[in-house]
Image (cartoon, rainbow, N blue to C red; front, side, top):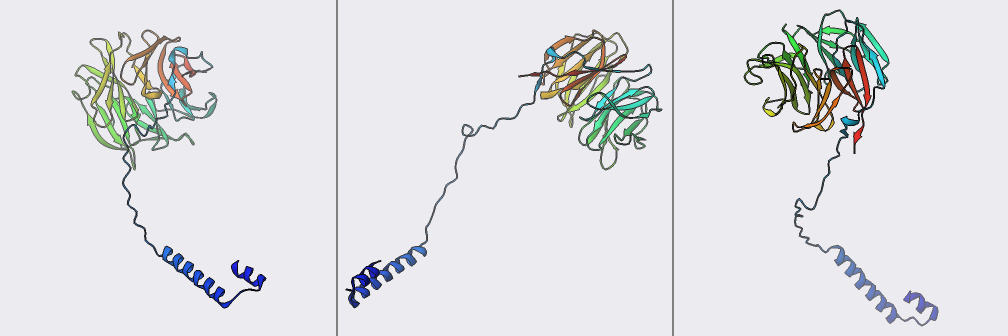
Length: 326
């Protein structure tokens, strides 16, 4: 800009030009020195305590059993049908004599197949296998939900079974006998025996384990004492079978029918009391939360798609909408 100014004024001298060149050289030298300068930066770790960060867990909807809807769909069960239920989140497996039937969320039959393998004691869904497991009196079967093909598991030893449930890796099966055992089978790569847990670890000599349900690394056991005519529920660690809590309801067993429970959201549980026609909602720490009367008399229950409670009675299956507790 200075050179342009001198040029326009026509008064530029060699001395002026030399002075400008000298200043430009100094500026260039200063820029090069700046580019080559090294800065030493010392940093220290940021110390955070528990008050700086608050991570909130997203809570599941809490079931409000006291406001359970009326039956919005009912599925008739013909005479000779077994009361067990199982679901995979999309479909519900029910026995309608003489068939095993797969229902969708609207209680419509998707597919079915003839069941000719005798009594059904229990059912469950295996995420690992992607199949339903059906427990017979002495045998165990895998049911493909797409083809409804039935395959007996030949690696299972013949025994008198009563109830079954699955974790991600293990099939738990309870034996139908006094001083019951829980037998564990690995699911993958093949269903194979792992171990058997016997009394007095899991029950007393005069007790029957009549129901087992897995949820969130724990096993819920329904334990019946045939001499005292009592029933209680235990929650145990699925790996160690260490007891977490025990709940003793005010139920007297007068009928020779197995008591069952099912898991609810928020690690809660539901006991189906057929003796007095009640549903007992149990908190995650083993306390009674809610008790409601239910008709017709319920025998089995399962949470279907987290929005529906399915209850199985003598003559059919009833679907109820879930009302969430805010």
